[in-house]
Amino acid sequence: MKRLLLAAASGGLFGLGLMVSGMTNPAKVQGWLDFLGDWDPTLAFVLGGAILPMFLAWRYAEGRRPALGGSFPAKPDPVIDRNLVLGSAMFGVGWGLAGLCPGPAMASIGYGNPHVWLFVASMIAGMAVTPWTRRKLDALPAKG
Image (cartoon, rainbow, N blue to C red; front, side):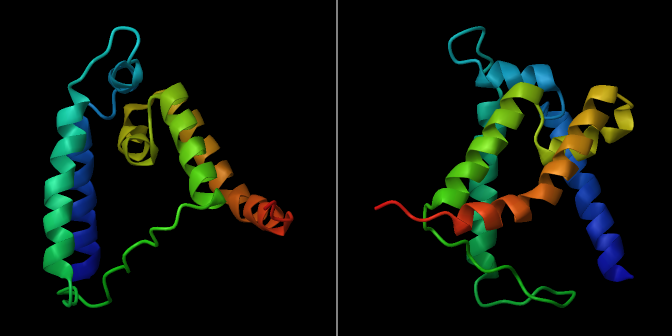
């Protein structure tokens, strides 16, 4: 029960941070991505401000176990491959077109905006077809 309460509190705090920072406002996000137009640099502070705490958290977590059991995730593989590039491109296109990414979209569901619901439904559909797509791409012969 402690784990569920801590997860709910952490998720709520994360969602609140996304709302306060403006990450749940698609117009603000699209303004951040519009380098050649009416660029809004304020999200740079949000993105930049996330780097230091996460760096410190990774350093602190090394060799430790979570207080409520389980284990911390392994560090990601630094290899840049087709899956990483394709996934990054899909994420970027979705973020740029909709002005939302998964975290802010989930935090925005309660707003009742049909565009957010459409985005979340599309995101879930994309997650559902990703394993099939990945198997198909992995089956293609490598060009070298």
